[in-house]
Length: 471
Image (cartoon, rainbow, N blue to C red; front, side):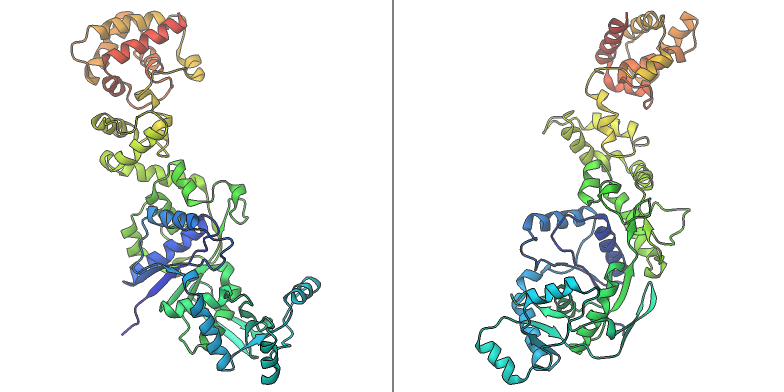
């Protein structure tokens, strides 16, 4: 019987969750779910000076926002320091690691002077008496793992066979003199403790993998399978960074992207998932997932493609599904007061707009006229649709609308078209100025539906406003 698949996402809380980290988390989650396995979360917070609880909360919130859930209690490395020290002592007792009493400053100086530094192994062959004497004298020490000559190889699930000569490694430190484990040591100790079967992480970790394999073997543990994801690049072919715009997941949340769209895009970018249908739910992505579909070349993050995907996901949702988040957007832009309930009105707004908006914030940006009279009017639209007779035409239209007993979209459209007939003009000469008067914009959803939603009083007032402004 196959061993249960267990994977983990292990961020360091020294900064917000960025897109590359989110993509790694998503691949781990999809892999686990596609195999009926477990997805675990570990916070690698041994760097106390740079780690903080606020960042931990932000990372957890971002993962939850993306729809990721984990199957066991979160593991915090900062709560396991005694375990790492104990495990380092185990390796010393087995003769697989040793205490290094070399002066840290001297080593740092040597690293500066050397093009490619390798530890000399000076303390590897200290006699037991020399070790005891140093300990009696209270000399600080780090713990180093012993690296023996040979080859280290593994079959990467993405990159295939990789082999490294141990000549390229040195006896690296696993426990610092302050008792804090190095990244390499803590990772392996925890992966063994968490029974991790597959390690899916960024390709920048490939140089770390030989060191980790050495440690697995030192503990006489089965080495997990590795899959290294090519890094995310910007459209200019350089590693994704702030110069390409927002990189934090929380920034995309604030900008009005749906979590489903961000998840969808990060899940398929750099994979061979068919281009004919890329708008996929998490369940569909689970069913299609195969880590071997990840291309070996770097994935290019294109915010325009994400925006397109976001638009598609918004249009697929019902107004009811979008209601809560759109209310929050309206409140953020002070179009709606906290606690104010106008559900039917807002659902109608969503239905009118959801096929047109690219981001959730567009509901407020392009739909503010549902709450406020236009403060100004689009100059391009005016130059295209306004002439010296428009105000007179709108006065006639206003009178026709005032006389309507039933103020629904059909009645409003009928009144406008009859007015155009009476004036001997095309309906468009009234429709476009009518739109500008009500919305301030040259484009909008169905203007008759908008007028019906706004109600007669607001429509007549806005017609008065623009007539008075341009008369």
